[in-house]
Image 1 (cartoon, rainbow, N blue to C red):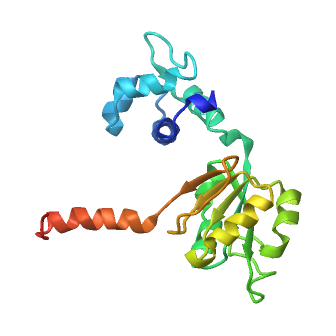
Image 2: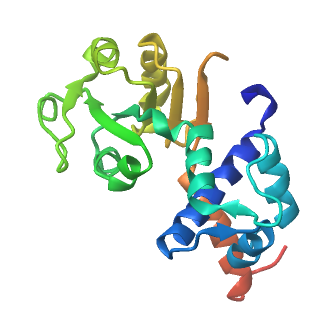
Image 3: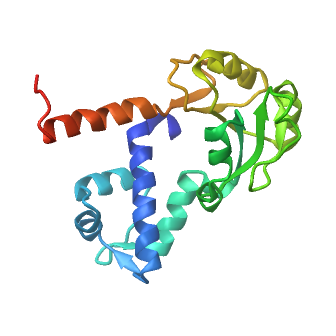
Length: 214
């Protein structure tokens, strides 16, 4: 099934899950696709289409049971697997990511940071995530059963680090480096380019605040 589901669809499933979390926190037991769409500025037909990929998740005349749909979406997204994650780079960004409590709440466990600076190796983040020598990546990855690596190193060394991650047997990579990185087809590589996002916001603000138009 995973080969038939687009990345855009999985991204929307994550959005639906966050919306359901809010409804559940408010004590709401059931919700229709229309109410869900109206409440969170979504598209009701798109919600129904996305969820239909995974069977009959709703109940005719009722809609969706919030708690049940939350559980089902967490299973579909693999969040019930408690995946282990390593952060590559113990700089400001890497340490901030390692200590972000939201990852744990969503089912991801940050188990290691890796760096090549002697003064950082053997230390811990504020939340207690240990910092290892990147030379030990393969051994630690096997011991801890790490399946996701987050790249938070300078762009000049990002590809080299990705190569080490691939060699360690890790199959999924989230890249925060602006460098265009390469990975084998068997490895899923997803990019998060903060600079592009900021430039997009700058474009919007420049036109809304009297900037030159093209």
